[in-house]
Amino acid sequence: MRIGIPTETTHEEKRVGLAPAGVDALIRSGHTVYIQSCAGIGSHFSDEDYRKTGANIVYSAEEVFLRSEMVVKVAPFSDAEAELLQENQTLFSFLHLAVGKKNIIEALLKKKITAIGYELIEDEQGLPVLQSMSEIAGQLSIQVAERYLESNLHGGRGILLGGITGVAPAAVVILGAGVVGTTAAKAALGRGAQVIVLDKDLTRLRAITNTFRQKVTTVVANPYTISRGVKFADVLIGAVLIKGIKAPSIVTEEMVKTMKKGAVIVDASIDQGGCIETSRITSISDPVYTSHDVIHYCVPNMPALVSRTASYGLNNAALNYIQNIADNGTENALRNDEGLASGVCAYSGYCSNEALANTFDLEYRRLRIFSTN
Image (spheres, rainbow, N blue to C red):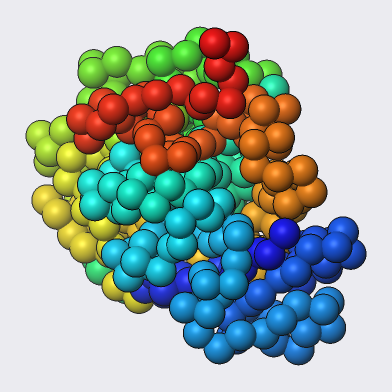
């Protein structure tokens, strides 16, 4: 199969679709890889690194798309990239279509693209490709919050996350006990913070209690407990995820108004629309703003801050799925791997994700390849 890796065009996105190790594996299996020149530079992979694996270096995104049967990306598609797609191509990327523009999915349907969203692929343990980025986002959320608590940055509270003898540590309140929340709890606890995790799911809360040996306080999430936790927090981490749809806004503006002056919010759910009413998308170069005297950090592609680690993590998590389709063809791979098939948002000109179809009032059809009629 002919596989293309374009340079990411999203503002300040430095990750790359596949690391050289992944390209090498595909080429050793007999496939052809086209990678746009400088696609890996942001992750410190040179064109020569890819050339040594046998990849073909091309010099425009147009050439990547024209030559490829499968396109492997990182960030959601822009309007310009959607224009470059060729009919019947297979696409791997984080898509986040539920919080995107309708014209993007319309372009996927019009060109009969098989569009596979990394954030929707499932296995027995959960969402394996998304998990790799969530682990990074969880760690970074604490790293970022620690920085903005400092007095000299945007009027932070001037609190040391772990405190010192005789001085209490910061209170870190985490909304959501999934991968981001659990990883954030681990990072915050490791720095000596007081950590409170809220979630509706008691099973997840029990896992947090057992994992951290009761060193983390767990609370069942409801409007009352959320409002109390928000008011108490020096750091508030939004880590709410509902697969395939916009994140619910569980922290209201009125709750934010009750927060301490100089407290920090990191909304790690912002790539799915955000779970805090006062959140709005920011960028790596301009990451924060202040609302109601509370610092907000809302960068949707946070893992791009550590682009090399993130590119390796994405490569490790996604390569088997890419290899499966390359070796066996799209239809056979989807037929034999229901977890992979769960990531398909568009197939053969129709929307195959029910939540997405409902969001944009599109006709929904389940994947025909599984039909027994």
